[in-house]
Amino acid sequence: MMDAAHWHLALTHVPVVGAGFAVALLGVALATRDRLLRRIALGAVVAVALTAVPTYLTGEPAKDVVERLPGVSRQLVEVHEEAAATALVAIEIAGGLALLGLLATARAAQVSRWIVTGLLLVTAASVGLMAWTANLGGQIRHPEIRASQAPAARTPQTASAATTATSTGEH
Image 1 (spheres, rainbow, N blue to C red):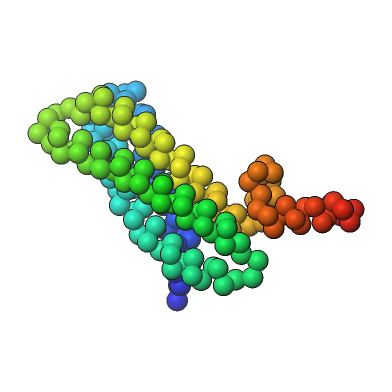
Image 2: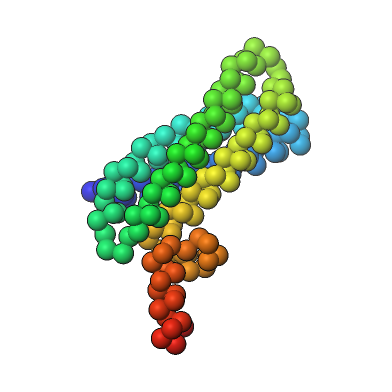
């Protein structure tokens, strides 16, 4: 049976990848001026916004599981949690705008280029925030990711370990 951490890990990829896909759809819809593709792209953004909600909601129970594991930095978990809240707000704004765009143009044959362009920008920003959040989440259990980050991104524990390794001649 899957626990909260499993569900969170399983769901977390859906909004990140889905939002990237939605941005690509929006871009192609703008480039081709395809009316149907514009509607599909807006619907994709709404769908991604909906999937982000259970992903975020499984985060807190996953936190309760993960924080008990040895070697887990609570500081990394907190930073990931804060980034997730920001990313959620961003993708929900994009989803809300997409839904409004769909509703506003329900009777029109054409979705405005301005709506699609604005939504592309908001959704692209959401993708960036979600990718950053995913990276922070990966750092919680993958020290090899932390080690490859710039020194400012290292936690006190990894910085301390690096100092110890350097002072003892280990590499």
